[in-house]
Length: 462
Image: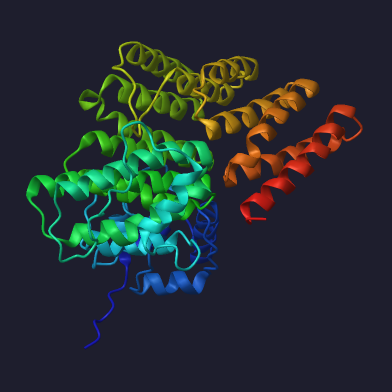
């Protein structure tokens, strides 16, 4: 028997409050979706269906809430729109990390891996995929990635300590390899691991303590997958993985990982130009500060500073930077972790705060310090920092220094598989076009064509 649709008077009231027509809401959702990598073609007819009681799939309800929040100048939750599907799928994929999910986590992981749009078959035997990654970069000290007999991934197997050790070792390897090789190399392994092995283990019987640890390691891997999609310019999938990381952390009652997931969403929102949302998410992460380690506090406070700077709040931005610095000064020894915040990362965030507040000279100094203090193994961070520095140098009219810095980007480029870095090189060409008569620019562009060509051959196995 088909359920009778109930007209959505709540959405109608929100539209009336905003002074919007159905066409205007549809256009706003299309624009917001495009920023996340979706290609929606909604029109007033689609909105008419929503008003009559139909409920669109994720992430549309969250986008509707977001665009209405911006227009009305107040927070509109997904629940306020009455567009979320009662099965829980919308809440799982598009809600905030605080929301639960009625959908089995294993099934959600499989859907998210599919959403990441990796080539067909990538999700498949994850161990062979991992072996393809290993020769490219050594495992961290003490990590034995693949034991002689890896635990089976059957849902009928009871999950125990051996499964957790393998998952932790894979996480440690992927943390290092992602930074050294770029997300395009590691993301298929991550999404495959989540969609097959971890989804099976989360459905399998386990002791309560083991299940909690499994939730935590899956949360970490989901966060890494989120960053991998972010680095790969797959913003919709990135947002979904970050939110999943927060949901898993919340289910495991771990405020630290929950805060880290919120921070990841804030970083993405700032990158996409959603400055108010970036600040809200950073401050939501900051609500957990009392429970974080000193290093994690610095990690979150630095993003709170950037959130404030993006909204023009200079006083709060500098106050939060000072708090981040004090926390980092008291931080415990660094370890291999998601919140592996150090002085180079702090200097980079300080630079972004200064740039957001219009101090490009200060931002250049901070990025230069960040590069000086950056650990050698963090190749992608070094390359993207150099690309950002080159852009700021060009903003200041320092053409020769900008070209020299872009040469440093090209030094790392063939060794990295990163869509963000490819975008940076494309931007470089566009920014330098007005200076095509400069000998330094001609030399740089000639080298760039060669380096990009070589990198393409390496990526294709040529």
